[in-house]
Length: 317
Ligand SMILES: Cc1cc2nc3c(=O)[nH]c(=O)nc-3n(C[C@H](O)[C@H](O)[C@H](O)COP(=O)(O)OP(=O)(O)OC[C@H]3O[C@@H](n4cnc5c(N)ncnc54)[C@H](O)[C@@H]3O)c2cc1C
Image (tube, rainbow, N blue to C red):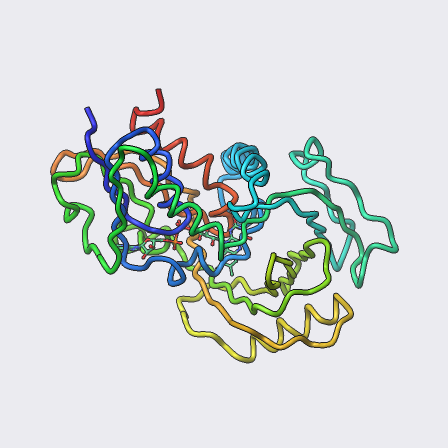
């Protein structure tokens, strides 16, 4: 019988799991090297869309489950979740509308709605403003009745067995950190860089996944311009990349180049063999549930995967 749960990681995966455990009254404590702004999660554009994560079938199922939860959260403005029209474009041929997007109301865009692209489709999706949403998750976790939860930052584990034995269940939400912590050589860092610019008069999100990746995501108080996706461990901002991103987005939106308020870099935790969502045993016999490797879809998969973690821990009933 599980009494207390240790969650390793304070990004969107760890926080979402923490909410679910704490709201079921399990004593839940998060341990993480980085919290808040320093996590990969804080660098994300955080729009709902399955991207750069495997395996396709499970990813779509977890994403659709998450979609429903986020639509519910979008009714409360305090959560930082809102619904937005996502316009997805191709520079080359006719962009296919994914089958799963049709029941969600995806519609092909007509010629005069294509700024500089060849084809596109539009779809209503949840957008999580990370400057609000990560705090919302944190507060929802800390305020869960009877759970006595807490977040301990600046804690780096070399091994999962180092988690205090008083926790009888361990959840591994270490993102790219699982490469050394699990350890897992299958994980690779898909580096992303974004530029935050002032709020724009833009009523929808613009995304083009063709190389070079380009997106403009309007949020409540600013706009996220992206992006990059390259195999690299490099954490520092590259100023040339920022200039390229801002120039590319401004050209598509047909605006003067805005000033850059902030630049962010994050390492998408892409796992070649797919998201790792499975239970295992630590060497000391305790149960661990792994929940990492969400690549470019950590927000998109967050609630679906967190519910599966509960299932795998045998606590969903
Ligand atoms: C530029 C960019 C744009 C993105 N846009 C989107 C998007 O639009 N939609 C979407 O769904 N996703 C997007 N993503 C992907 C998304 O950000 C990630 O999938 C998600 O943040 C992964 O979350 P996580 O909680 O698993 O990992 P992280 O946020 O990386 O958190 C990992 C946590 O584990 C801790 N940790 C790691 N190792 C250890 C250790 N040894 N000991 C203790 N603690 C440890 C870390 O300190 C951290 O707290 C984007 C990513 C980037 C970089």
